Every structure is written in structure tokens, then in C-alpha cells.
Image 1 (cartoon, rainbow, N blue to C red):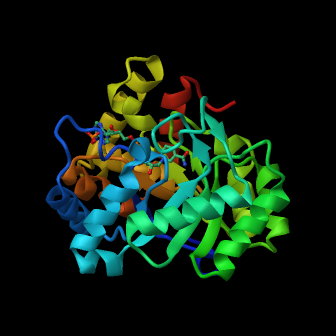
Image 2: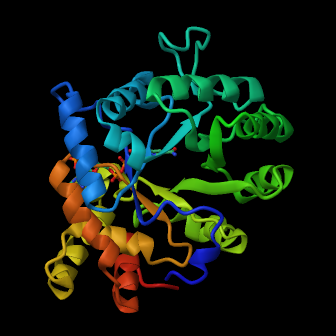
Length: 302
Ligand SMILES: NC(=O)c1ccc[n+]([C@@H]2O[C@H](COP(=O)([O-])OP(=O)(O)OC[C@H]3O[C@@H](n4cnc5c(N)ncnc54)[C@H](OP(=O)(O)O)[C@@H]3O)[C@@H](O)[C@H]2O)c1
């Protein structure tokens, strides 16, 4: 459903490419391979890269930046989303002896400036607070985000993994500027349908972003009942949707809810960028959407 989509605060389209896992392969990822992957995204109408300070033990932003610098077309055509505020023990965060969050203005400004440098860009299109930090007053977070906007270092700001109350509080302090709430959503994690996140997005004309749309891959590799039932159901539905790949059917399921989340792809396989994005053109019938819900839950709707 795309009703009122022209009134959205900000819209990245149906798909973004996620970079959390790009350095996870057995072989080191070459810049050339990532250039090819990013071009494949553009061919399939994905023009947003989703990254974060913490990804790849704080090394992914640099890899993305080196790739963008090597090909000016990529630099011009992609929007960049990055996130900050998670500190885990590492060489980059020598002051952190345990994992912790820091959404203070000081840290957010510092992280955004570092992201600009590593990514080799002048402005971050969308800068997100990665997770709510219970120890920072939202006024301080708002101050940092506003400073970054005022200094032209970020164009838009948003949050990730925020409850509806945390979103409302920060959004009010920022005069309704939050562009998104990036949340986990898949048939294996339906929390945003129940906790009000998607309703809040509809109310505020915010397009959410859905992370781990395939349950982090568990939907295909998981041995649990829900995963097996889902694979069986998707396999049985595939012929009805033109032999659609199973991941494409799942992305269609994610996109079908009224809040119409931007799906963040997490694959490292270049061919899955093309096959998965076919899901953007699939309109699941109501009965089939609910059949996938049923397979995930192991019961019919109450
Ligand atoms: N804001 C947050 O807190 C947060 C948290 C987590 C992630 N994210 C963002 O969301 C993005 C996506 O998350 P995710 O990587 O967990 O997404 P996902 O799509 O749920 O999981 C990706 C995994 O699924 C596998 N996969 C994909 N298609 C498959 C298929 N057809 N058959 C079998 N396996 C398949 C991939 O393996 P292959 O590589 O082999 O395809 C990969 O290991 C991340 O890159 C990141 O940008 C944000």
C-alpha cells in the first residue's frame, strides 16, 4: 500500500543495501567486488547504503568509503545512512571495557565527523541514533542531532530500535524532524506490528526501515518449527507468484504492511540482490500474507 506516500517526511524507496555483514566472508572483500555489488544495487533501483560506525568491528564505514571514492558514479548516486552510539571494547574504543551506549551530543557529533571522514562524503543523508541510550537525556541527544543539521554535516536524522515513547519524546524535542525508526521486522520478528511502532510511523508520516528482514538468515537456515513451516509455506506459494524466489516473497510480505517499511537487504551474494528485489513488484493476496503469518506463529489468527 502506498497511500499518502507523497506526504512522507523522508523516503528511501522499497530497498536499501545493508553493509553489516560485508566483511564477514571467508575471503577478504576486494574493493572491486564491492564496486560490482553496489552497481548491481543501482541496476535494481537500490540507491541507499545502510551502514553504521560499529559494523565490522568499526571497519565497514572505511571499506564503504574506499569503494565510493574509487567510483565517482557511486558517490553521486547513493544516499548514505549511518548510525552511531554503540561502544564496544575494541582498538577504536579503548575507553570502553564493556559494551555500552552513548547518545550524548558530544559522542554523536564526534561519530558523525568520523563517519564523514571514513566515508569520504561531505554530508550524511540520514544519521541515526543506533540504539536508545538510557543514560543520556533526550534533550542532549536532540542538541547533538540539531547541531549536525545546523553545521550541514547531516541532512536528516532518525533513530533505530526506539520504543514509541522514546521516539515521541525525541521527535517532539526536534519539532517533528525524525525521518525514520529502523526496527527489526520479519515473519520471525513481528514486534513492530504489536508494539505500536508501525502505527506511530503511519501517524507521523514516517517510513520505517526493516532490519534483518530474513531473520538474519535464520528463515533459511533455522531448524526450528517456525522456520521450517515458513520455508514450506513460501515454497508452496512460489508457483502462484511466478516461481518467485523465497526471499522475494518475504520482502513482499514485509513491504505489504501499511507502514510500508524500506527493506534492508543483508545478502553478500550479488545474484540475490537481483532476485530478492523482485519482491518489490509482488502484491501478496491477503490470504497469502496471513498464511505466512500463520506459518510463523504455528496457529491461525485469534
Ligand atoms: N539498526 C540495527 O540495529 C540493525 C541491526 C541489524 C542489521 N541492521 C541492518 O540491516 C541489514 C540487514 O540485516 P541482516 O543482514 O540481518 O538481513 P537478513 O536479510 O535478515 O539476513 C542476511 C543473511 O541472510 C542470508 N540470506 C539472504 N538471502 C538468502 C537466501 N535466499 N537463502 C539463504 N540465505 C539467505 C544472507 O546470506 P548470503 O550473504 O549468503 O546471502 C545473510 O547471511 C544489515 O546489513 C544492517 O545494515 C540494522
